[in-house]
Length: 237
Image (cartoon, rainbow, N blue to C red; front, side, top):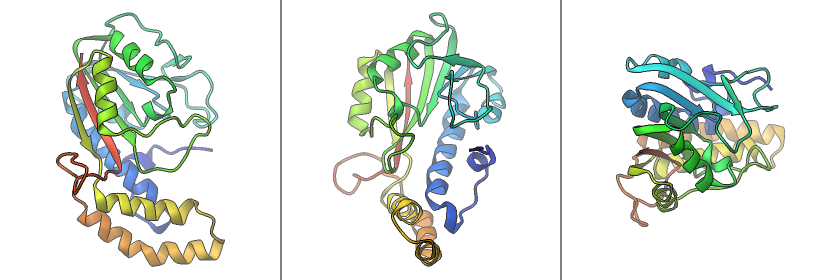
């Protein structure tokens, strides 16, 4: 399967790509915002096709981008990362990079405490860690789909690993969560080909309205502000 980076950087909403539009555009917005503080050498953990490489390299203070992924991955075809690893120990020395990013990666690692400590190890003092994780999403990349994180579990893991100044934001709120579920349902649920096509077109206007009117929760209180599509995380060593 060939994955186009254009799908990450310039996706337009269509009936056939509803769940991917909500997820990818929210992540892209977060990457654009948080990467403005990046500097020096940036390590992209679980880089995949490295869709955000050009965005990171365009940040004036960034000197070098390093994409790192597994030795073998059928998902990414012939895309070759800058560094290959075993998913356990990062092949870099202590304090070798200034910043680390990991978009949609932590949910796939079976030992988050261990990998967060490893990420922190290769960072210089004062360096920034940025990550995103999904919350409203179906099982994917089976069997390597391990977790869905709440803001509280994510903060606990980061602080336990030694990170400070942890900030966690929602990628989307109630309306975007419902829009994403509509997209996931018409895309992946057990429907006939014709039913799927009809429902995709019929629900598309509702989907667009939900996307347009979404409001991200400013906090996580368990009531009005208790639903989110995913999380954007920043923390510092």
